[in-house]
Each structure stands twice: as C-alpha cells, then as structure tokens.
Image 1 (cartoon, rainbow, N blue to C red):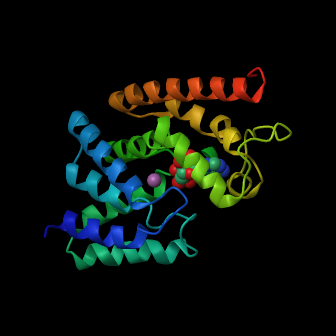
Image 2 (image 1 turned 45 degrees about the horizontal axis):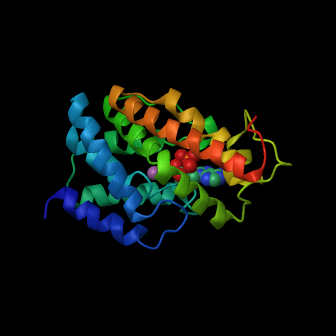
Length: 213
Ligand code: ADP
Ligand code: NI
C-alpha cells in the first residue's frame, strides 16, 4: 500500500460515523475533484491528494481538541514517512482552507487554492443543499424561520453558535462562495452549482408562499 492508500484507510476509519456533513464520502468527493483541478492547474498531485484526504480530520466542528488532532495528523505523516517539507505544506493547507464564517485567512499556495476550491464546491449544488439540511438537523436548526434575518459580518463564535436556519445559511455562506473561487475550473463548476441553488431557493420561497427578497 502506498502513502495515499494508507492515509485513505486511516481517514475512513475516523470519519465513517460522522453525521454533520463531514462524512467519508465528503472526503472522497473533495479528493476526486481536487485531483481533477490539480491536473488542470499543474499543482502537486501528492500534496493536493493528501491535504484533501486529511482536511477535515482536525476540523473544530468534529473534534474537541483541535491542537491535539493536528498533532495526531503530523504523527501519522511521520509514521508513513512523508518528508518534513511535504508535512509542513500539507499542515499549512489543512489549517488555512476553512471558511469559518468568512473569518479564515487567505490561502498561500496553488495546492492550497486547489483543495480550498474542491472543499467549497462540495458545499454547493445539490450536494451542498443536502449537506446544509443535514448539518442544520444535527444542530437543531429550523429549515427556515422568517423571523430570523441572515447575518452579515459575524465573528467565528457567532457563526458557529448563534441560532440561524438552513435557508439563512445560503445567504450567510453558500451564495458567497462563487466569488471566492481561486481556480478557473473551480469557478466554472461553482457557477453552475450557484445557478442550481438559486433555482432551488426560488422554488422554495414560491412553495412557502413568499416572494424572494
Ligand atoms: P466551514 O468551512 O464553514 O467550517 P464546513 O464546510 O466544514 O464549514 O461545513 C460542513 C457543511 O455544513 C457544509 O456543507 C456547510 O455548508 C454546512 N454548514 C456549515 N455551517 C452551517 C450552518 N450554520 N447551517 C447550515 N449548514 C451549515
Ligand atoms: Ni470539508
């Protein structure tokens, strides 16, 4: 087994029972699309694949102790004998790509841009819609609550902890992602998926009996 296959197994074991939208198949989809974009952009395929596989293992929504989880990843990469330079790059990617309510840092390298685009694409389109409702259900949020306005300029704590709704999440994050894409291919796919979400929202508000603002 090569390093990538070993890492696939290691991550799958950890995320197989995850039910807040970061399950193993999210990782599979992100890794596949990241590899496609990496080929088009001429990015380092090993770094992109490894970072995509590992990008959610230390996510603050999944683990209680993010620092310990990050150290566990470093230890894993040492175990399978990844070079120090590659470990540094992979860890840098994992720690900078998250959206975090718009509070995240800007990514530094082409490989980070590719993995960030791939992760963001999985928040869009039909799958993005499904994940939003799964996450909302897991957090006990309503499908929609017309008395709660979508938030702008929130802190990470507000983004994570304040009550919102699944539909508000489209306005707080999903519809903003298209403009944040780094790569040409990422932007192309995001544009299609964005359009599909707009159609979904139009239909949703029509059924609700509201004109969309
Ligand atoms: P982030 O990068 O903002 O931490 P993730 O991509 O890790 O978010 O979130 C996992 C999934 O859950 C995504 O599909 C995302 O759109 C969705 N999600 C995140 N926060 C919320 C929320 N407050 N309400 C509904 N869905 C959410
Ligand atoms: Ni992810």
